[in-house]
Image 1 (cartoon, helix red, strand yellow):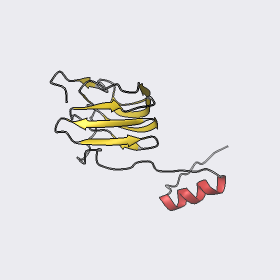
Image 2 (tube, helix red, strand yellow):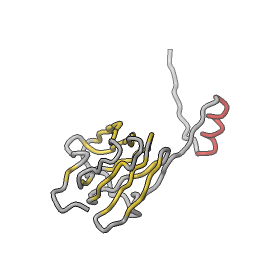
Image 3 (spheres, one colour):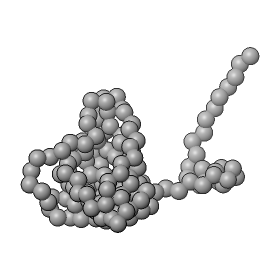
Length: 141
């Protein structure tokens, strides 16, 4: 017996209709070629890809050390408010439900503003030999 499998690429309109017919809801939280600071995302590394998904809880009032991300990542704020700040003072607030595309190779910090802990679900698209986060030793923002 011979089986044939075929595939068809669905555009956004077809995908929405197909999902609606099954009762599935698809909501795009963020889609961009740019990071939250407005700069374009870098090209992917040429090594094997590695996807990591982390749930990160930052206690209310805690400021993260200065750091960078050498890989592309995106996150969704599940709870709380996260303030992100670049070295030049550029600051953005992300509240519960917000999605963001993280900066790559840009020194920044984050702070959980409270009163609740901030919980972030983060998706990293990197490679096995690249760290997700690198702490930077320089003066605080």
